Length: 247
Image: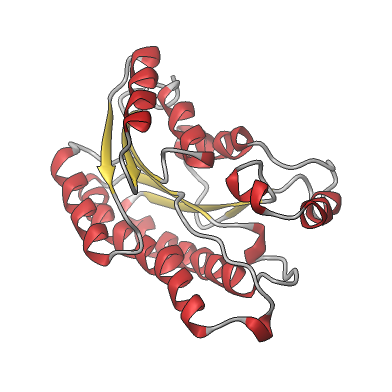
């Protein structure tokens, strides 16, 4: 029970990596504020199953990262409902692919709004509570696209690179309050985004790794658990690559 009595905020918690992080944290005794863009009956039923299975509480929070007012409202709601905020996992984001010459500034603004600006805005509001507690762990889900310039990743890779740089600044400034800030950079991972890629693109990325397989969402969730737990109390300002050994 590595997260017993702790409270975590997870964005993009209804599917993919976020959903797996949610259940992984629940299995370790963590109370959860699950941020989702839409709250369907299927999502609510899924959360009920997790609550019953692990005996923890999940509070759904509506959050649309593309809407600044929604981000502000979610921040106020979370701060008002949570006695403490021990962990933040900034997982939600959007993808975008396209070659440099075919990329519009409009598309860049849209992706940066979600993948960078909204992440910073939400974290600012929640980190105020952490600074009063003088403790916390913030985990930003970036991507190896931030570190490796493969064709077609100008917008997505640049947005995730900005998130990595923001992680370093947050770590530097929040360390005085005993708040750790780290990023995870997954390689190609079996999520809905994986299914949207062409087979050739998937194979190219997989074959660059030493392990020659895509990541499973659980691989990323395990890394998030490590960074959220007391096993990593002297780790901050780092980018943990979970990419199967791309060198």
